[in-house]
Amino acid sequence: MATEIAAAITAAQHGDTQAFYRIYQQFIGRVYAICWRLLANKQQAEDASQEVFIKVWQQLPAFRSGSSFATWLHSVATHTAVDHWRQQKNLRLTDSSDQLELAEPTVGCSGDTATLEQAILRLPAQARAVFVLFALEGYLHQEIAGLLGIAEGSSKAQYHRARQLLQEWLADE
Image (cartoon, rainbow, N blue to C red):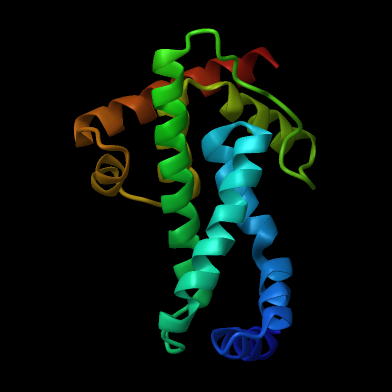
């Protein structure tokens, strides 16, 4: 499978749209999961996912084949989702009537995982973003602070807050 993806990447770098579609099919689930967890809104996650693949198509010719495509794609997805998260956050500051959409958990989740997914989606926006980036995506607090435009201490405090809320909510289940 890795050889097939590598061949598809090379072909897509030369403009082969069918090869790019194969890449899209292989990675859309992972990209959507990142966007969904950060944005907690189905439409926003879909929009961000599509934007990720537009960026990938545009930047693919510059991708170095010696690098890990999955890592590069993950970075593009995370940065794009964070950009959407910032826009969403700014909209909520100006429109207090905005309600967070809680929809179905990530496809294929078992009962306990689905419960955790739903609990993560209930977190306040900044606490959710920090929790997802730190606990699920493996970013360091210093990196999260840079991505979200907050202090490193705020990142740590938001993570602590998220963990406390999740523990309380999951204990009630």
